[in-house]
Image (cartoon, rainbow, N blue to C red; front, top):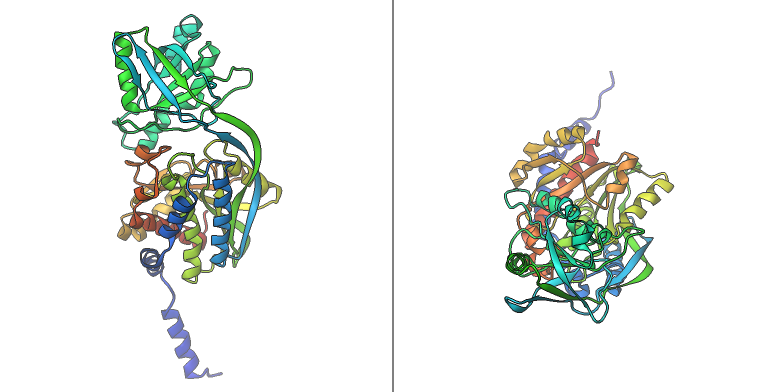
Amino acid sequence: MRLFPAFLIFVSVSLSGYAQTDEEMLRKIYDEALTSSPVYENLHYLTKRIGHRLAGSTQAAAAVEYTRQLMEAYGFDTVFLQPVMVPHWVRGDKEQCRMLSALRGQDNLPVIALGNSVGTGPDGLTAEVVEVHDFDELKKLGRKQVAGKIVFFNRPFDYTLINTFRAYGDAVNQRGSGAIEAAKLGAVAVLVRSMASQVDDVPHTGSLHYADGVTKIPGVAISTRAADLLSATLKQDPELKIYIRTTCEYKGMVPSYNVIGQLNGSEKPDEYIVIGGHLDSWDVGEGAHDDGAGCMQSIEVLRLFKALGIRPHHTLRAVMFMNEENGLRGGRQYAAEAERNNEKHILAMESDRGGFTPRGFTLGDDKLLQKVKEWAALFAPYEIYEFQPGGGGADIGPLRKQGTKMVGFLPDSHRYFTLHHTANDVFEAVDKRELEMGAATMTALIYLLDKYGVE
């Protein structure tokens, strides 16, 4: 019988005792994020030194270069730019809107042009107003009552819905497609109640869409308080008029980039896990919550892996998608390139709901949802309790047709739509600890899914 030296037996036993448990690794992830993370300072640079980042702008180009250099400085295995053509839309002069009423005289109303909108021209336009709450109501009015007028879409959020994203989803089609439906009936412009979860004086921008063969008419969003004023005044003075002046302009397609940082997988390098947010933002505010926070958190996931010496089994990518706000071309381009290169993306996680207190995740299929729920006890010490069915996000959505499993980071939703697409979405609105907790929570789930797989 062969005898092994005693010290070899001792070493073997000792090493097995140092194996990291999942509880210990998650604790290390949260400790590192809450004590040594640069994620808040990185967001400060993006928002304060670069500012808003509308696709096609010089600020968007600066953000591409900043995030490329940042990920290179962290020593990721690969950092590269993925070309994508994006629309270059400019807002022009500050928008003007006045209510002209025989009862009240003139009232200036807070408005903001909707993204992709055509302008009114330098002289503006003046017309009577018809108020509707949905497309069915609009169609019932018919061309005779709509032609030559401004259609005022005034469907508010359902404030009884606890999840404000559901309220947003129930209301947003009037912003996205209202100009199409109104133009079909001869309207000259649309005025849309802001997609906001409270009544205030702040207008919220966001994209509208046009359709081939349908006249393009200007679209502006009006603040919720002004919308209530206009609605009340219309009931007293149905013949009041609205004056709108915008000078928006589409300047064609221009080159830009998705920015991608990568940690190579040790066991399955040809299987990819993506964590991402969108680098572009609207040209008001600083795009801090939407979606500077998500971009910096996504980069932080890979940084935390490196800082803690975690070598991923699969290849991890942090992707800064370009042009989510007014085109989604970055997300589509990424998916197209993945398919062209025969890259197998097993999982994609998106952070695009703000940098607020983390609550949990939405998961795109029942099997994955049940798998993650089995880790509920691991997340409970960090007050992460919500694991829900749902989509992952707009930018990772195009990967779904390739069989990629979808995950959405789920922070608290109650404050998001007070800031979303407004001038108030600035760095000061982001809390440092909330941002760090979100980055740690995303990293924790990626760690577990990378270790145990997604099936």
